[in-house]
Image (tube, rainbow, N blue to C red; front, side, top):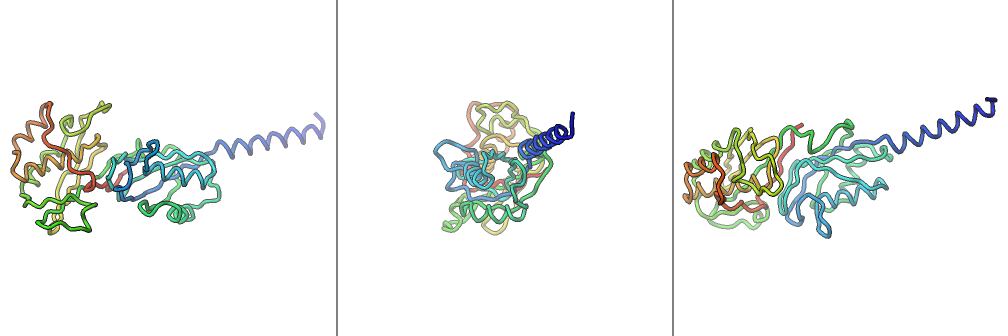
Amino acid sequence: MDAEGDFFYIFHRNLFCSFTYIFLIMTNWKLEISYIGKDFYGFQKQPGKRTIQGELEKVLSFLFDEEIRVIGAGRTDTGVHALGQVVNFKSRGHKGFSCDKLHKVLNRLLPEDIKIKKVEIVDDSFHARYSAKRRWYIYVVYNNYERDLFLKDYSWWISREINRELLIFSANLFKGVHDFKNFCVTEDEDQTVIEVYESFWYFKKDLLIYFISAPFFLRKMVRFIVGSMVEIALGRKSLIELEDYLKEERKERFSVPAPPWGLYLFRVDY
């Protein structure tokens, strides 16, 4: 091969490598976000409906000039809020964005009920859903004779006095390894045996805040748990009945689920 041939061979080889680098080397972005869920049909994208995933993908696809797919740590239902949801997505390179710049641009372009709290570039193997070790949810109950207009979309208002000691006792029963078939909407959920790491209540005047953590949760599981504890605390069901429901499968639910607007995805641990 002559000098001219060597030149064109090296030129085309380097050009091919450059294009391969540009189009195959992906950047994995991790976002921590919060949102008010009352005007969304949940996190997961649905045709013709406003969702968190849909809003994120629309803005990110515009910014990166490519189709972006967002993966969430938790698929929150309609009306459920988030204080610390985590998502990740991959793009072809940085497209000129630093973490700080992307953070600021996203908060300018996204709707007011979604906020980006943190942006990071992470290892290619990171997966918001499958890399998660523990998820935390909180549920807020407002227990007062009079309704609070400013809390109505962010808590479950219960006017009757709640027995707080029974809330504490019932929360302890959910801690540990249990089969939660009686406390979820099963549908396509195969694994219903879950270890609950933490389950406790925190009281601040009229606000009753429930904390629960586990490696994963079934659909509506936290809402069924909260609904069950409230039934006991209002004297409608007993702790013994709850223990029985945790031991064996029943045709009927222990209670109806608590409403979605009191539920928050609080934090995801990796």
